[in-house]
Image 1: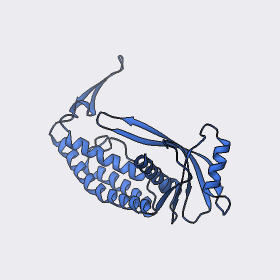
Image 2: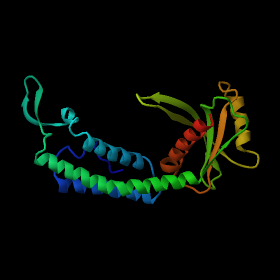
Image 3: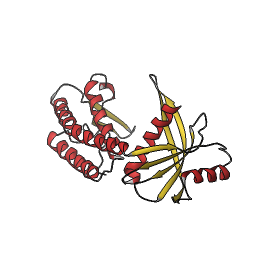
Image 4: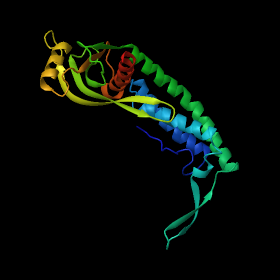
Length: 238
């Protein structure tokens, strides 16, 4: 993927035409992936840069102390660098503000396209609990079937909980442990029995069968969306 640096809009040559060229090349690459329904890491990267620009725009004054500074001289003997701040409402800052306004305008429709793809993929997903669920289903397994493919990917998952000052969030760690060919006898229910037999550390694991009715790129689209949907499904159920 044609990537942008975290501070691409304020690093190097702060020139609107140049930054415009950099941005459009990045968005062209993003849209090329979206055209093939490849969401990740493209969508999350795009949203990150959009929010980064908004944060800078809305907090320009408070960001002045942490803004990159222009090198004015180098004290080689002491290996020290002295910088001159460039965050002031001068021509440089006006150029930066023009870059930000243009970038936000161009990123917005691309984000909308990505979200529409995400919503469509989510609408084609079904999550079915397999067998009896434990009271706390935060550790377990899920199988993932991509459209009409007979191969199922089997993952072990573990919920993670992290907090910030305002809220608590749930995430999920997964590990691919096997694949199997689904058949009349090799069903998700049969796979659950095998998991219980082979993995004594989870005597009554939560097991889910996640499947889409049409195929999507597995690693770039279906799996990331399935993970998010599973987190929501388990959180709501619990």
